[in-house]
Every structure is written in structure tokens, then in C-alpha cells.
Length: 443
Image (tube, rainbow, N blue to C red):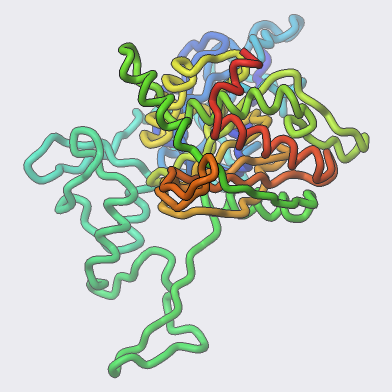
């Protein structure tokens, strides 16, 4: 007789509370090793292969492909060892950045000759245990056959859209969520179908437009929007934030970058130079590289800088994290920003690459705006915002000149420091932007 351990869907980070089963990687009766990936799931931000912390024989799977499960719901059960022996606990690395729970959620005994073929979860029967994984594909006009994400497939189904007639903009013609949303906006509802999220019947307050009923559109706060809403709401509830800002002459910084790139070798990004400035400033003002332990009523200053940066994708805004940014030079930072940005757009960021940040750099200048007062990325204590760099009149060396000017803003948790510290940090950043040689003091 063997012990059967239940493996539950782990916390996938970024405040996400559910994930959808994309593809089972094992079947009932398969022998799995410790930390072997057993299922591919998709959250609102990334596709992740989930490793099982136990080694043994798979006795049951919970949920069909396309089923959405909450964090903590059973994924599968594994028959492990003999009942007298302690079960193999594995390395504890269910996902990068997340450990397994100290004790399994449930233990029971099964007969080896009669492996469990399925079980009920909350009264609902799961998929047949021995069924082979099914991957839905749709033929894209004039191109290869792309694999369709369950989330995209469901969005199309709810909007009455036939994916067979839609050309995807992703790699090899892959149909992305943005393709479906664009098609739904462009085409009127057919055969009574309505765009995903729209009210089924006219709600109170419906207006008459040219003789037709225009219903209110209701968009569920779920997936990425729900996760962002929850996190930002928590930040506003818990963090007494304040913002200070300053204009800076970035002309010399732009010239320094041009000189670096003209010297040969890998190109250096502007974001990497700003990140290097941030890490130097945080070394001088460590109060801003911290978080607040509300239960202990302590400010925890971190000895490392895990630098988050805002990246806009088809899935929405995500904040990948560059680990140990304080120990990286401009070339290393440039390469890591590029790698994480590409992974964010492809939806392949791991939970470990989306969590654990200690400070965030937000370059909202790419949207063509000058300034912003962003909400602090909880549980961090501060965020540096960078606006667009544009030619403006500026007094330089006593004379009016046209210079490359940028607005810098710092939103910070007033519990970790006062305005003098925040102002000192921002002034140092501005000095480095205006005179990059200032950085030489900290190299």
C-alpha cells in the first residue's frame, strides 16, 4: 500500500488567484520524478509549466484542459513510497520563487492494482483520467496552423467570433488576445452574439442612439485587470504615499549614451543608464529600497536591489524584475531588460521574474507624456517615474538654449522616510542625469 499525496495549484504570484489548464503533461499511471513538470497552466500574465514536488505514480488528475482553477485547488494526486516511510518531499521548488507547503493537503491510501481514475472536486467530475491531452488548433488564412490559447478561444466563443477566419499577428500566425479583441471591436454582433463582457440585456440607463438600443458595457475585473485592481487598491489602502518631482537637463546623458554606442560593442539602452543611476541613488538612500512589515511595525531595508520595470504588453501592464540590479553594469542591464521585455510580450515570464522587486523604475515617457504620479508597487516603498525627453528652452550656463529636458518624479511611502530623504534621492538622480560624470564617484 502506498500513500497518496495531493498536489494543489500553487500561488503563481502578482496577486493572481486562478489559472487555466492549457495542457496536461502527464497521464494517470505515469511515473513522475520530483520537480517534473506535470501541467501547463496560463494565468492572465504568463504560461507556466508547473512542477510537482512529489515523486511517484500519478493516480488522478483534476480538471479538463480549458478549465479554470483557483489557487489551492487540487491538480493531481501521486502515490508515493510505502506507508511506513516518510514521503519524498522534493526540492521544494514548485515554481521559481515559491516553495511547497510544509504538509500535503490530504493523504489517503489506494490499492496499487486499482489506481484512481478520477475524483470529484466540489461535486463536479473531472476529465477522464486516461484521456490524452488535446491541443486546439485553428487554421490561419495563408499561414501555418497556430495553437490557440484557451483564454483566447473562450474570448472568441463568448463574442461569437469564428477563429478559422482570423489571421493571427503572433509568431507563425499565432492568434493573440489582441487579435480577437480587435476583431470583436471591428465587427458587429452576429446571430445574437455579443462582445465579451457586454451586458446580455439593456441595463438601466440604456440610451437610444439613432433608434437603436445602446447597452452599457460591463467588463469583469478578472485576470490581469482584476489582479492589478486588487494590488493597486491594497497599495492605496496601506501606503501613505507622496510624490515629488523635478525637471532635469538630460542633454549630457543623451550625449554620453551616443558616445558609448559609437565606441562599438553592444548598444546601451537609455533604460539601462537610468537603472544604473537608480541603483547608485539607492546605495546613498537605502530607506527607499525597503518595505514595511506592518505586523512587526518595522521598516525592512533590503541589502540588494531587485529592480522592477513597467512593461506594456497585449495582456496589459506587467512589472518584470531584474535580480541584483545593483551588481550589474550598463551592458548587463541592457541585455536583461531586453530578455525580460521579450518574455513579457510572449507571455512566458515565470512567477519568479514577476515578483520580489524592491524598487520600480517606470518609464512612462514612451507613451508621450511628461509626468505622472504613479501608485507605489506594493509592498515596495518607492517608484521613480521618467517622462519623455523633449527639446525645451532651458537656461544653460547663464544663457537661454534649447536642451533635452525630462521630468523625473518620485512616489514614496511616507512611513519609510520624510521629504528630505526623498528629495535628496531625486536630486541625486537629477544630478546624474544632468552630469553623468557624477556617477564616477560611486563606480
